[in-house]
Length: 165
Length: 329
Image 1: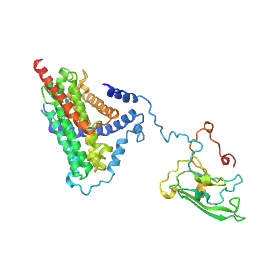
Image 2: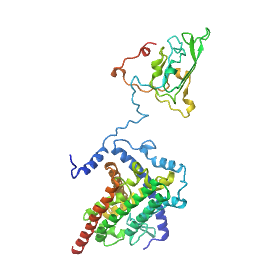
Image 3: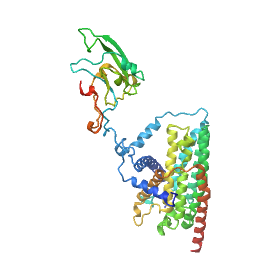
């Protein structure tokens, strides 16, 4: 359509009308948009139901990580200090959150379903040193929970490890 | 009875402070209105409804590093924002905002300086204000600044001519250059917007171009010239340039209200003079902001062509027709 004489002024009417409509902004801390069930957030290390850690220190996750941010140092399981089923456990397990790109390759690489990416995304810190997460920080449940969208709305298959522990 | 000099001094201090507060809340108003017109909230975190946002901005600007480009010419670099802001504030001294009051035994005028050629003073100060932009850009010794300041200067000078011509009609009808007498003439006859609507249109467009507001803000457009003549300015020095722009906006709105909309008169409720003046200036400033939200930017050659080939002839014809009608009617 070629420009008609008063088209410019109709633009003014449009902007004026927007003054009376409700803005579409979602105010963040008061309203948190629910994340999808398979959202890749902060990592979590899991335990078996009898209390033993699932992680055996095989470093497959460190090998798979494209950003090279996982540090695994394994150690022998002795009879009086049994941490994981199997021969070895991860004595040192650190993830550098400032390098992690949250791709999920470590979750895919782990043969024991020990490391998964949970839904937590509020992990800001005031200094870079606080961003290196150690094993006990990763084992713990997140303190603040983010709202997760209704699972029934989404046709996603639930992975084995999330249903059976 | 004339006003004693020390009352003028007190009044000028009070009015300058009020204009600065008005400038701060004009920035708040602009961000809120622009946000609402764009379907979003403006700032609403710093205090209720974002009302403390201007203070947050002020503290941020003052705390920034006061840097100095090595190649810049020292004294001129510092003086440029001072010139801009001084002329912007000084132009407000002749705009009448009230009818004059008797307090105890002294007379207080409704204007800071009763100058018999007030209108010419405002245009003169506007022209000197262009120096601030030129000097700022040139003294920064940077290509973007130089280009930006040249463009700004060309734009401001071209639209100043049309601005001055567009008020000729008002001067002919008001029979005086003194702003107080123009306001009183409007009270006696008709608000000059009715006979001078063409003059008002030209004045509005010239107003937007004089203050470098969108759609005429190519000189300071971020994507075109980084930031034009204030590229090399940071912190509070940049804040001074912005202050000058917004205070110019307020002053020119005040001038438009005085010349075309009857200043502080409002039919029979004249004793509340300053309130009506503030309300009308607020409406004009909102109009500026509305235009910013609705219209895209003019390209530089379109801008110059419009100023010289369209606006100037229209302003001239308006002045000539008004002169003929005033003489023969």
